[in-house]
Image 1 (cartoon, rainbow, N blue to C red):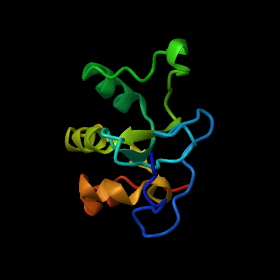
Image 2: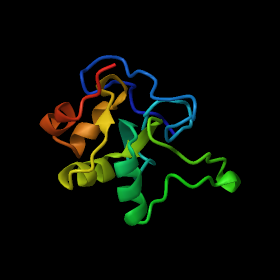
Image 3: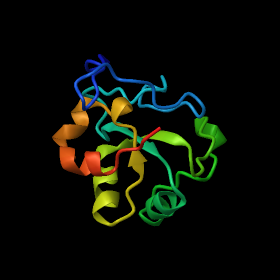
Length: 124
């Protein structure tokens, strides 16, 4: 598997999203991607209770620990690399979390319009 270039949606070097919990398709802390990443885990989200409930309702429970997959379970405030399509769906339903633009991969723009991403920008 070859990673796509680590560039964010601003055209700058991709920043880390989270190492606690460790996130990313490659579990390297960044929202890097590659051709094999069919879910396109490229959006660095700052999770909210609302988004976690929305995701669970749609069948992707991110809050329950799954030790067999070395998955700690997520809580509001955690940062996590979300699938671009799921982020867009949540944004369209009013449950989209804020995102770190600097840590969101350029490939996200293949799925999510830039204005939607900018509207969800997280300010440190």
